[in-house]
View 1 (cartoon, rainbow, N blue to C red):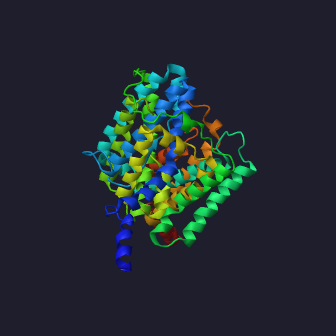
View 2 (view 1 turned 90 degrees about the horizontal axis):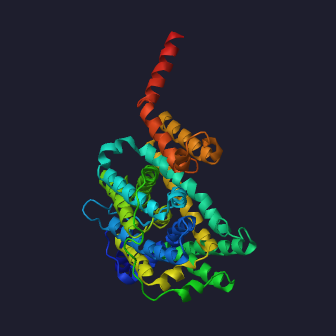
View 3 (view 1 turned 135 degrees about the vertical axis):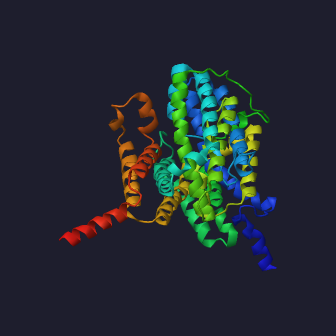
Length: 451
């Protein structure tokens, strides 16, 4: 009987395993809690920069939850060639915040939505034809990008641990204590829990941290009492306006987002399934990224993309079952249709998230390093990785280095290490000799013979 139970529950580690709904819900909920605040934060930032009212922002937050759920479902269970069939969780992308704040404040939010619609179609079409340019993104380029994604998220986890970037009490003792309690609970649960329940360590930490936060008076329930019981997203709440300058700028960021999606897809396949992502999977992931972003624009929302937080969670737990994540997507859609549920999830304090995400983001770095190891530590690969990471991470920590470039270049690269790492790695991969190490050995041998 015990062997039967273990076999039954082991299916959470299988892509298409059969999992009872009652067992799938907590694993799916864990994924949603890990990304929920990050999913709605970009909307809040861009809406404020664009001068939208609080009621307009609330409607966009509602739409963001529904779109994230729909996008995740399409990734899990593709429609035609759109979707990867991998356990990828989708959400509103932080990558676009800077450029859309600029477009929204300069031209208006309707112009930002017009650019989102066009850019999404461009990325979606490029995704469908990914096999023609996939050879440019070799395994060592993908490994460099995955490593960069992990490193770029480390400070995100640290900011959350301290209370959230820009918060009035950032780094306070109460925030650090709350983050530490959550982190210790995650670690303790991983050590003490048995079997597949170990993989619910993040959910356990989030729940305990949330309860402690309530006791500390760090949870504001005002938004729950103000929320309507049932509401549906509004189609075309903003009439799209099209500005060529805004479209070009946003399309460039879509290419950066595509880079991150390639990295996330590669990291997920490597960490969760122990293999490289196929061309079909990457093409489907990119197509979903683009076309669902356009769908998001129809509801007045920002572009959607794969969430690295959840890739880190898969790397940590090895739970790859599609149905478990499907249940998470259902929860996300319900949170959008029933605002009180979304309001409850939105009250999760930043330090609680930070306590859980530190390990998850570190897992992405480890996945990137593992991918590099699989590519081999030859001279060519080491040059690509070393220089791309040095330039990408180093230069973006000193954004003033980009002040001589046009504004559009600064918006794309100045603070986006993933974009710089990707560009540098692709260039190096194209110009460095394929048999660089062999040529070097031949030259050394000739010198020895002459000597």
